[in-house]
Length: 95
Image (tube, rainbow, N blue to C red; front, side):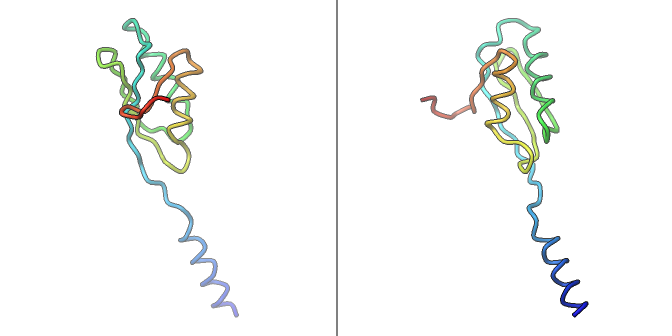
């Protein structure tokens, strides 16, 4: 019985979702000065699960690496929008 219980615990423990790092590029067209990327970067870094952010004023985009079990594109775009810089997934069709 103890072996069955231990095996069940091990299977359940190993079957949980593992974090898969994801990297996306967000288009942030509203950045109009060289200080804007600082605000965008700080807003994205506050999203739980984000591990790396690079923002380019020239390209008007942000490259974000995050843990897909804690964050997603919706949370990232919401963070930039809340900071005053609406963003979209680069390459995504805007409705």
